[in-house]
Length: 614
Image (cartoon, rainbow, N blue to C red):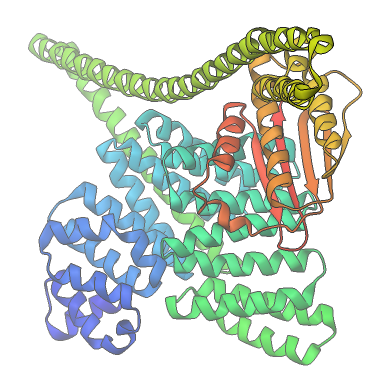
């Protein structure tokens, strides 16, 4: 380690001191990273444990901007924590140093740091720390194609995450599980895990996690052959990552776009994104991503038949391959895990041997038996205490889940109450005001023979106004609660809505419904009808479309696709909109445990896709 070398060469014994010496030594290169430099400025003002906590609390921002800086700071935090006996802080610093070296491509250092963190967290019985470390280890094993070990470690991360109420790590596990299944082409099994991960990120307002969740959705769409849908999700992820200043995430997203184009044979389109990824990864020292970018460039040029450029980029990739992980290093590093587990078993055997010796001594001495019994009672009390603590943690986790469910049910009740009120008002308009207007028309019509020629025009206008009022009341009543939806079902209500739109002759709606009846509870059918009604109204009001296609299929899932040939729009503007239309659509679909996907490009129409489990 370069920092340790400096301490020995120049007699620097304080870890906090020699990190700043290193920063001064590399002052020119570090100053190029403005945000990183500001983090160092803050760190310089801190001492002791405050400095260590600062590094732990801000590690993501640090490594997102520059991996070399992250490696330096996490190593110094780890050394300082170990020197002062701060075990918990040493464990987290070791974990994050492992993450930084892993992302930098220095796998020889990352695994020992992961195992050290796991050892420390085990000694503290810190289940949250164990969960976080195991999910990182799962990624490490997966990288080394140790798939069975990766899955086993991920399941351990899940169990301890649930035990400690670590929702964020649980969301990461769902994402890992989803990707694991998709790589086995088990898309239907992967889909529920994807929805769970996305729901957790949204509930926690986790911008970092959402950036990864949308990449998962992108891969799902790409593997199902939907390139445009995949690219739209990557754009959403990139937008989030730019907002939070996640430079390494933005660099990763560029190479993901390139891979999407490469996967469908559009090599010329893929090349600029691989180059952009290398350009963004170089300042932050993301060696593994740079190597991968060069590797994909040489593959792209091979596909295009430009072997001169392919060879050039192969040479550049090879420069990084020598310093990055290979198969032989993988076997050597993975042996560390075996060594760690062996040491753990040896300690257990040693403890068992000591216990046997104590039991033998107890048989010879009554006093020893007494103290052993007393020790057993104390141990039993301690185990009971641990069991009670675990029970409380499980109860807290259950309470959190119940709270989230109650919030969702509360919102659902609010929507259902609103629909009931709509239904009541619609009924009163139809039965009350509608009947009064109809009676008024009969009375006025009865006066036809008695109307003098002088007031004939006024009489005719009165009849016309009453007819228009009756029609308007019917329209309002239908919009608030269509009779067909209540009386003869969801499909009939959709057909009636389409008929009303087509009668206006401003736009033509083409509808295709499944042959079998869609069986939904009344509350769910109303919510889904409102979503479709809102999307159709958006297309009519803003898209300037000539045609709208509404297709509903009902196989394993209920799929609704609404397309138009209108002017289209930039989907990134949805998150910035002040209106409540899209917000209502997302809220109602979330209540139905469904998913919304919006694809649109200015000048090329729009497509809204809804997927719901039935």
